[in-house]
Amino acid sequence: MRIGLLGTGMVGQTLSGALARIGHNVVIGTRDPEAALSRTEATRPGMEPFSRWHGANPGVSVETFSDAAAHGEIVVNATAGTASLDALRAAGQDNLDGKVLIDVANPLDFSAGFPPTLSVANTDSLAEQIQRAYPGARVVKALNTVTASVMVDPQGLGGGEHDVFLSGDDAGAKDEVGRLLREWFGWQRVIDLGDISTARGTEMYLALWVRLMAATGSAAFNIRVVR
Amino acid sequence: MRIGLLGTGMVGQTLSGALARIGHNVVIGTRDPEAALSRTEATRPGMEPFSRWHGANPGVSVETFSDAAAHGEIVVNATAGTASLDALRAAGQDNLDGKVLIDVANPLDFSAGFPPTLSVANTDSLAEQIQRAYPGARVVKALNTVTASVMVDPQGLGGGEHDVFLSGDDAGAKDEVGRLLREWFGWQRVIDLGDISTARGTEMYLALWVRLMAATGSAAFNIRVVR
Image 1 (cartoon, each protein chain N blue to C red):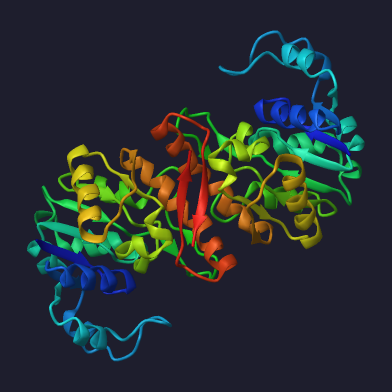
Image 2: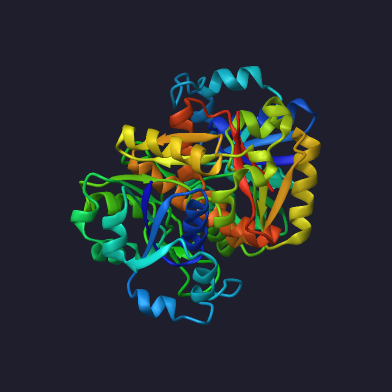
């Protein structure tokens, strides 16, 4: 499958690497591909420099936001949430129209340090902003409630007995994303929360997520809904 | 133990009834006890009228906010979150100073219908507002992430294999509340998130909680952190 993945950060690297390894044709999109590929220093502690990551993942082509979105049958927004609308503008409406757009970003604002706040919350969400800006895109919020390593290997955590959530206005797109999460990564427990406004719930959950991460000392966790 | 419980709603009724049944000396506080006791209509669908509830729970004394808080060795805030600061003002600083104050309220604003928004979020929380207003109280946020019936019977849901969270600045108060949640209701899995500002996390989680309730059709659920 041709996948256009926007964002070269930890989530973009992990998702595109995992998708390429299982045989998908992945283009990772960034503002300035040459600058990204020449980066020899990590942009965040614990991450490897992008050039080194790409050396280990030569199957992933690195192109502009626009070329990556044009390439994808499906587009994945894995940019930093506070930069997502700019990135999608660069990707271009024509390259998004009619496509399933999986939004895995969180609008976390770290400008005042830890804990981050959300740049949009309570009466709106990043996913809704994206859906409003690109009404022709079939936006599905998903995977934003787990760290990158859990996104691509849910079975590696508690035998996969934990949940991933979907939010979106397009039922067909949600069905497809639910199916792809199982097929790509082995997600067994997928909860459809409802329309795109339910993404407020999963984005605001990040306020608990960051505190759980701090309290437990690890980002490798998820929640299971117990009924 | 003498417990002062503020609020006559579903949570106040359920908590005070359960605490009285296991032998505690519970006074439930409300603005106007006579008015509350003469209420023969339910204030919310699915709830019984307060007078009928009290008829079935005669061991719980119904007094003013101030008398209830004065009575308690421990005070529990089970008022509606948007009314909590007013209720605590009526309870009186002198009746809160030095005491453990368990805050189970959520600042849910239903004025625009469903989904509710939070009247405070992101850069502050109700629990922090309460702690700032009553610096002598030992505020511990707890139980606000589950519906009333789960608060008092965690074992009745998935064998108790799900989590309750504590937030507070006073380590000794959190230890005591964690012990009481086990002793009173049988909570086995208690996660200390950190200082009182971590209550932003559990309060903002309500934005996900209300969507999970709507999607699953039941409030009788909780989350388990899977590591």
